[in-house]
Image (cartoon, rainbow over all chains, first blue to last red; front, side, top):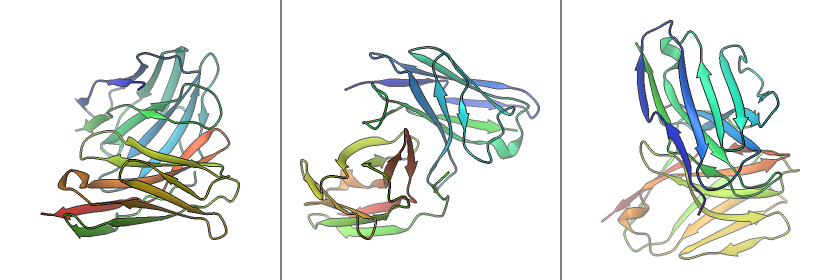
Length: 116
Length: 110
């Protein structure tokens, strides 16, 4: 099946710094990718929809200036957590599908962010 | 968003028994649903999907049932094995986005 990768798998950063997380579709092109956030023992919460070549669509309550999304190519979307704080510590997961509209989503392995 | 972050309910079953995991979805306009399995520290893994024009779909050892009247999904796992221990989420597709249910933590007792 289709493979989605994320990098890094785990990052520890100091409060106030910015962290970039990459999401790549390895063997297919994805015009749309999704970014989720997951706290321990909780469900995935959709943060934003990343659209290739255009601005991301953010869910209500998600700060777009805090979580910068760039979908520069059909195989890469990046999420940058700016001025990270300890409350941003979480598991960030991306997903991508092979077509637009409803269809199977392939998930990356996730990135664990720890802000100290 | 349509998912709510709540602490996970748990389900424990004996190895070899059948498991039934339930999920209530929120949007009657959702037309596509997926069940995912997530092991600790990993991303979700696709199990089975179903479109809204169906009420049942079977895979290998798994069956998904969809009741649109009450907006309810269930995942049945036959002959549950220790490797099935994980957190299971249902996801509903609304428009072009997926929203996840609360999830259920399944523990298989050998």
